[in-house]
Amino acid sequence: MFTFAEALHQRLLVFDGPMGTELYRHHIFTNRCFDELNLTEPNLIEQILTDYREAGADVLTTNTFGANRHTLEKYGIADRLAEINKAGAQIARKIAMSGSHAPGGGSSENSLFVAGSIGPIPSGTYSEPELETMILEQVDALWDSGKGVDVILFETQPSRKAMERAARTMTQRPKIPFVLSCTVVSDTESASGEPIARLLAPIPDNFAQPIAFGMNCGAGPEGLLQAAEEAVKITHLPLIVQPNAGIPKEFEGRRIYYSSPEYVATYAMRLANLGVAAIGGCCGMTPEHIREIAKMVKPLDKGRSAKIILHAAQPEVKEQPETPFQDRSRLSWKLARRDWVTTVELVPPRGYDLTEIVEKSRKLYRHGIDAINIPDGPRASSRISPLVVAQQILREANIEPILHFCCRDRNLIGMQADLLGCAAFGIRNLLFVTGDPPKLGGYPDATGVFDTDSIGMSAVQRRLNRGIDLGGLALPPTQAVIGVGLDPTSLDRKRELDRFRKKIDAGAEFAITQPVFDPNALLSFLEAIGDCPIPVIAGIWPLTSYRNAEFMQNEVPGVIVPDETMNRMQAVSKYSKEDQLAVGVEIAREMIAAVRGRVCGVQVSAPFGRTEIALAVLE
Image 1 (cartoon, rainbow, N blue to C red):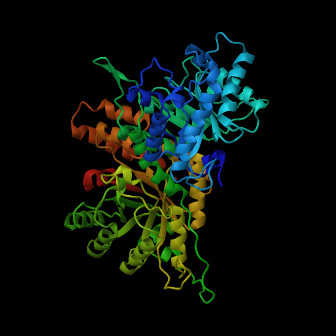
Image 2 (tube, rainbow, N blue to C red; image 1 turned 120 degrees about the horizontal axis):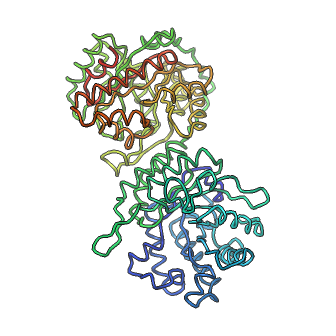
């Protein structure tokens, strides 16, 4: 049974979107008190929350943002404050429970939670004791002796002072969990010019402590992404990010948000990659935005949180000795000696004619390349089986493949079957990757399986190398060389280092990095690892144009192109494609030169299948 605070640490949660702009979309105009609708039009509030629930939200927020005494007095209904807040909590709880989820904080992993919304209160005309009283009126009505909401959400707080006021007030209700969420408007600062470091600094010890920090509203997905990049470096508390749909534009008297659900969802994925605890929406977002966010981040989170339980070997089954690492393949022989290796990545075709990719592999073999990297459904694309491609290249081009093995598309039974197929075909070099969520590709309604992740598959393959299958049964030992991915530019370095060490413990024997454009980032990461027990191959992507650099920066998960590189590519963007490519190749060569003494080789991508670009980098 998870409480809300526990759930923040267990999985990535999806919050709902705004209530105010949704009410406006339902033709409720701003001259009405939105909070009073809990009493006068509860069916409408129920419908909006139901839409968010059906879109995939894990957390529903009460319609009580402005249900404080200051605001309600303007409408002459301050005497109904407790009634309005309790009704808001009851409506949200009803919808949370009616979605086949458990009440009261979650009796299962999939339970919906209810957050009690408390917005900012103008402080100019009130004393601090009066403000604290106003806050407690809402808190008590929403909490209602633990029968109301699961957490109090102080959202859209305009300043550090307002956040500390809320925390100080909550010392009077020490058993009630709460979140402090501030607004960042531009340049990662509050409206009053306070930086993120000030806004999210630790709350004083003599105040009640929030279970999480949050950032909501602000200057749209891009603005809050920049703020989140700063925030994850500052706070150790879980971070909840709820951007608005950007700055609305005036069009024929209407204020319209132009951020599409798909656009917002791409930023949600980047936020997920930062390691935030929850993602939702604020002003201008709709249930469709939340639906796309949920489609994007939930499969990704499933892959990250997937675990695998290897059954103990049957009593009569004995572990077999593994084939020595250096004897499993030509690649492993070179890696064991720490010889320099060169590999080139070729993406499988969308059709089934393998003539071209085999001929390219032959060409690369003639130029002395050690292996061909074969991605498995990169960016959730649907292509011919990479296992078939690897087998054909090995047989007809006489060059070893490094087969990427993605955990997204098959369950454990199917994955073990393919691993045994690799053994039958003599495909020894395997690179285990968790995989991009299906929403990234051209098949957004496909489901991600994610029975396990790259850590789990490394453990499975190591057992197969020792002659034991998933169920603990005996089979002839396989001779796979176990590789894993590595992201040295991850902003959540602690998590990436921790996962890398777990991959090694699970059986990883070499690693290939994401495309790296900043040699200092890679060198710094390797320094943080210390005495790395397995060889590392650096991923190199030669940029073909400034447009290609923008694509890598904005659309490819886990890739960061530094400003210096972007500026170099932009400086030649007015010239020919050949001139832009020449600079991209030059940058790639500089990368290799900078890291050569610290890695065991490189994987160079062949953009658009152009092997001559990869060879130009290597030669």
